[in-house]
Image 1 (spheres, rainbow, N blue to C red):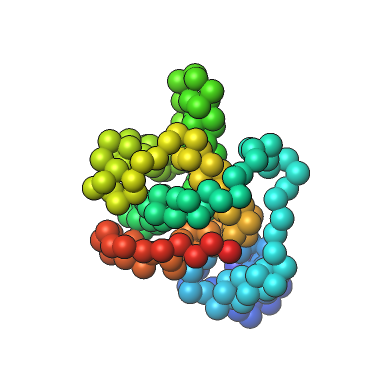
Image 2: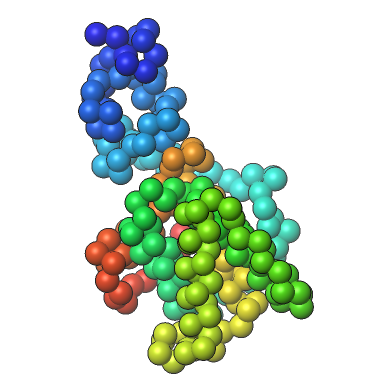
Length: 211
């Protein structure tokens, strides 16, 4: 039986996303590109283990690369970082179609907004795609609430500069954690691993493990 994707090679691997066998080449080239792979696919997990042994680096043309991060920001605001990451994980659990590129786009756009804000300019340009815009709004709403009720959020006093730095930090972490493919959810799965309660959409105290 030939592969249903290329129609050329022999189908030898069962693809859970397509519920049929495909060839090894199409599995490798179309994984998280045209194939929406489930997180528990054995071939996806094997590829991720390989990628972990060959870490990604920030590309030279990455956005916000000129931003210098404070060396102690993560340690000064661990609760805020945890709450930001949990907000993303919870959103992605509620919107399973969200991909790593969606998360990265929302983080970048919000970081750009805060960059202009701390420069004294109020200017926002949320991403256009619906999921990216919704995540942008969700994070923006979280920051507004946290700044208005810091004691209730168990975060304490926060500044716009702190938020900007942590947005850039998460954005860079996402670039390093994702596979780089258009339907990758590797970064999202990493965040879910730190915040298992997000799967049930229940708020609970969690801690992000910073690599």
